[in-house]
Image (cartoon, rainbow, N blue to C red):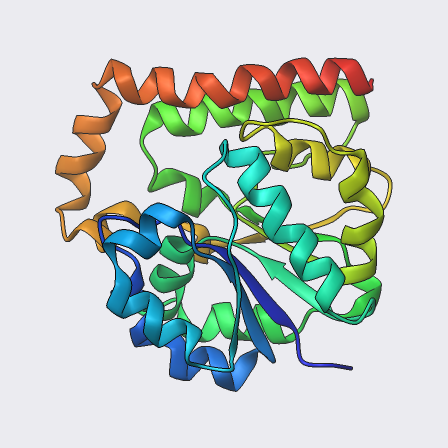
Length: 252
């Protein structure tokens, strides 16, 4: 089987995540055939040195798309990956903060083992947050996203993380479903799962624990308490969870 590829949106005008990517790139090269990334204009403009280094490395296939809503941004990147990779190549769609957290903490070995164990027969495979992983997240994050999962259980009799953080899918499978996605916001990731509803497999993992305290260098409990008591954090999650629930109802 071909080595998998990793697919990463990289909107990072503040330069928070690109240094992390540089740190983990040597390890990525031992596990993945290539990394397919999207570097938006704001990131290119404000982080020119980091962008230059990425574009000069043949390991990276870089998309250059205009600024757009997050769903359109993801769709453009995923279309690029689906078009440029062999149909049977496994693509790991994920996020740089989650990836850096998994690789730079004690979860390193379990993450790599899970990624390397993915077979074609298992795809599409949603890596879902285990109970232990969810316990690390702020309560409002967990309760709101779990609400979407619960609605999915009622409607489809399957326990699926529609707001997934890591999806392993063959390039051909992704190419098949993307033309049937239309959402412009983050509910686009739920739309992908809905298009694969019958085929989707799941695996619960601890390495999808909450990454923000590690990335930001904050005390986990202090940050967790702040986020749980911040109405803007609750509104932020409702802004994508409610459209996801509406989508689930439309597909039922």
